[in-house]
Structures are given as structure tokens and as C-alpha cells.
Image (tube, rainbow, N blue to C red; front, side):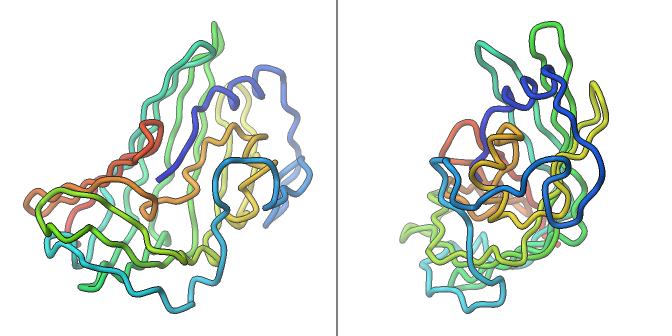
Length: 228
């Protein structure tokens, strides 16, 4: 569930980042990012069809079929303040042993807005494809607790598109593998994208037919899911 502050996106746009053309599977108007570029995040890797590790124990309230209702985040600092929202429609299936599949096929874009001094910056990002892995919620089995991914997590079929809508419409990345976004490419778009959506370390809370996943890092995305 990791994501970073959007301040750098605002900085890039404020400097008049030039982007032109649309190239599927790569950064638009930028060099193709390297998965091994400088970043503190662990690059997602592997095939989405590989067998997940054995996880568990998993609280019974998190198992079943889910659909995201929203993804939200808020960040602020000396350079910029930003808000993030949207992201409904992702299908998530969690098995009794923690096996988890995430299908982004019906996802609606996540929107972000930022203020950098007098400049207003806005844009969207969305995922495509699927991801899979295994999670554990610890031995307690209650309605709240730790949400812990169990390596390896499979991101090989997950792609991301990132674009600006303000101040000038521009596509920064189009249908790029999430593993390629990590590193130098991520820094060029301000690390705005959550590179471990729904399968990052955090906390869970069950409430009736709702599941809320909050990130360990306060700057990450909070996902709210309803039973499908």
C-alpha cells in the first residue's frame, strides 16, 4: 500500500515537463524507467500466475470476494499539499489460507490534486491486469489487526498508467509494468503511484460487509472494500 508524497509531481509540472506522443508499455516522452533505479521501495516482481506462498492464519472476516469502494490518501509538507481519491471497482478474492488475487480490470482511476505555492496540479493513475499473493492477519483472528503480505507477491501482469490533467494535460506513463515504474521512472512522476496496491503491509479492520486496509506508512493509500 506504499505511495509517496505528490510534491515532486507538482514540481515537475511547474517546471514545464514536456511530454509528447503515446507509447504503450513505456513512459511517454521520457526514457524507459529502470526497475533497478534508485528508490527505497522493493520492486514488485514475478508472474501473476505463479503459485503463492502458504500464508495464514487469516481472520475469517477478511475472507471472501470484495470490490473496492474507494482509495484515499492525504499528504502535506513544506513544498506541497495533496489529496488522493477514487479507485473503486477493483475485485479482490481472499481465500481461507490467505491466498489473495487482485483484478484491476474494472478499476476506475485514482485522482490526485496538489497545491504547490500558487500552482494547482491534478491528474489520475490507474492499474490494469492482475496481482496475486498471500497475506496473514496473525493468530488473533479478530475484526482488526495486522495485514501482512507473505513473499513472494506476483506483480508480473500488473500495469499502470499515469497522467496529468492540470495545468497541462499530459500522459507520463502509459500501460507500464508496475515493476518498471519503480526506480528512476517513479522519481520522474513523483512516486505518486502506490506500487503495492492492496498487498502492502498495513492494518485491516472489518465492519459488517466492509473491509478497510490502511497502510503502515502514513503517506500510503487507505482502501475501503465492500463484499462483492
